[in-house]
Picture (cartoon, rainbow, N blue to C red):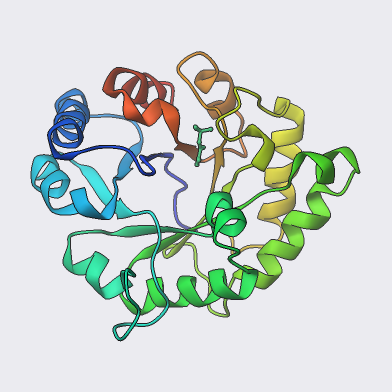
Length: 243
Ligand code: PEP
């Protein structure tokens, strides 16, 4: 069974021009230079992949994409294939983030196709799942996430090429987080539905203050961090809370 080494991944979303993106990447790389207990990953906008990749070179901080198209190439204006991400130096790609499920109407079938595309190109797919507030309040959180997993994970999932990120939609960017008991219950429910050894990240308003409590939960194999990943000190403080 593969070791479930914790991973702290930063999703920069649509933030960063060249100067500040490179400065942020250098800041993370500089802090991580002395070694760290977890794996580190940053996922900048597509426009910054090359320069952030160069800034991270030799640092043990990995580079990832925030999304991809399922096709390897073709007439898909504005889209990026997993082969292009690989070529740009990425080892991971986030798929099925709730912001894409909601604002781009991505379905589980879309996420499944993108996950297959990630594997085709040799990338690790970080597949995001999570319930809305009304779904949680209706007592349907686990049912919803189970359905997302069933629809989004292709045949052939393996711990080496799949990471699941549990991100309650209502916790993203709101400062709200589930109770540690709710995170543990959900991660256990996810774990029973994915290959043994697959890592499960928690995402949703993780910050330097709450990271230690969340990352100490035995079912939590790391964090997917949005807002706090835009500040090198905050991102590093979260990384230091690992393990
Ligand atoms: C995210 O969007 O993946 C996320 C976790 O955002 P935040 O940390 O800002 O809640």
